[in-house]
Length: 351
Ligand code: GLY
Image (tube, rainbow, N blue to C red; front, side, top):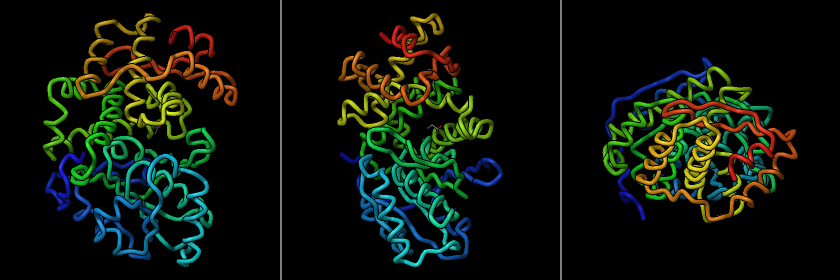
């Protein structure tokens, strides 16, 4: 089901900008007004997926373009190689600018291709999904999965710009829009009590309907994420906060392929809140508020897989990383802390 089908005209919203690492400008606004100003005056090649090509052909086909497959199963080195080969056929060289147009999968792949082809080309993104706008496209992480392991191969390279076009959210299926809300709620729990309270008092539909409000929500998340990445681009400490709910979420996604990333993150946040209460880090009423907001947004909080199986998946993962899990625990609404735990300690809290 599409929230509003085939409304693709640009919308008029107040544009907002934030600079990241002195080299990446993040815009929340409309592509049609921002892109002509920010695109360099040189050859541009687009990487996108078939949905975006179908919905926005006038945007995609004004450049040479490469279409990649849809969904997490396309986030592989096989896709990357196909794009490299297509780049060679198109005669892409170091002076070419790569423009990724799409959600998190497209921007992760486009950023990785651009930052490695011929040792690196300049690139930018038009982020078209809520999940991409509030998380995946911001912060310079690019990469692909390897076998079952998420984001195993990649780079930290900042795009020159990210345009988060909230008008494009109008063509997003409702399930995808909700999936993005999991990352919005995550961001609010990490560091924005005011945003959390706003989400508590407004139904998701209220702001899905209103571009100006959507802009504010996206903007709040982008500002918080940019602030965190500014302090810790390579995830040595503070950036780990952005992984709230993600340890369990990645295990859920591996075991239950029908669950999308946002849905798994919502379950992961719910579970880690329970663990935080059990470990004496979070007051039960705050846990209840976080659970209630996730449920109000339409998420199921219980994973469709027993916790013991999820912990076995996490154990497999941890063998590769020295056995320590940097678990993120909420300590209140708008504050979290990272605790390094052994698998046994983590399992005791989660079980
Ligand atoms: N999505 C987590 C991060 O960008 O660090």
